[in-house]
Image (cartoon, rainbow, N blue to C red; front, side):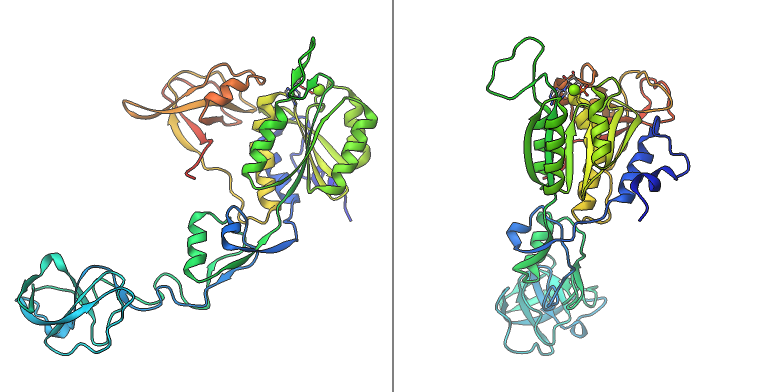
Length: 420
Ligand code: AMP
Ligand code: MG
């Protein structure tokens, strides 16, 4: 079998010292294949999981032709194109209570939304245009044959896939599954992620800081994003910059997880033993990605686990996670197709400095101004300033080739949160 390193490094335009973001994303995604484990879960437990087998509908949805409106069920042949007609109202049909008989010539039935269309009926006239007179109803001219009727199987046909494998199950899909009577579904097992931070300066919460120490915040941001992505998290805490501790952590992680996610220790000036060790334990590539923030990153495989060695700076770790790890988790978790969060063009309120030859990510605020949507940077952009990440509601992505941006120019905005 060809090694990971051979497969990647034979690609044309592969330059580990200045890898464009897009290229790194493509290389990573091309390597990763979905986990094979599948489990059966009840439909409520399926929220946020990925469907592993097509959900085939055993029934037509709707199951019967039914009325789309409240009104009168009629026979179109009784109506006239240019004059109103008077029909005898012989009863009412409610949703859930099908009419026992058949509608005959000259008759109408009052019908409610969702009620089954009785035999003989081919058209529904909305009640707002009709006029009731005693036990008759006057139907105006010009009603169309078949109007206001939802046909059996119009939404879903029996024995066809209601949802295809690979789909993330959101609230709409839970409803759709319920609508075909599916109480259980097959979903991919959760992606297991072993998570640890590296650095002698890191302290866990609950202990006071001594000189030169910082609290380990990366494990909390990463826990947050991994939880939102529905991963099973193996939190391995802080691992000191010490070869034995690190080797033990990487080995144990590789035996228990699909992904090993570390932060810190991958930049060039950093204790080189970390890089050496990662490389010795598996196949690990050290990349300098042409991006800001987040330049150094390790990617590879140790045993059966994918390794993402993210930079240590708190903002860099989040941005590199969003741009590289997120999609990998989606693919590993069985989602297909894997798509990036959509971006859209919005004018920037201020000029932005930008170096061509790298992708730059700004924490920003998307707001509605007098002329519609506009975006502005959210505070200082240093790669350690988590506060501006918190104040931001979107990222501005300044493309690889782009240079300085003038105020008013369109920039690509990627929202951080979606609808539910
Ligand atoms: P490194 O990539 O290990 O050189 O770390 C870069 C910077 O990020 C240093 O200032 C570290 O102290 C800081 N840093 C690294 N890991 C963490 C962490 N888990 N939480 C907060 N800051 C961190
Ligand atoms: Mg470090």
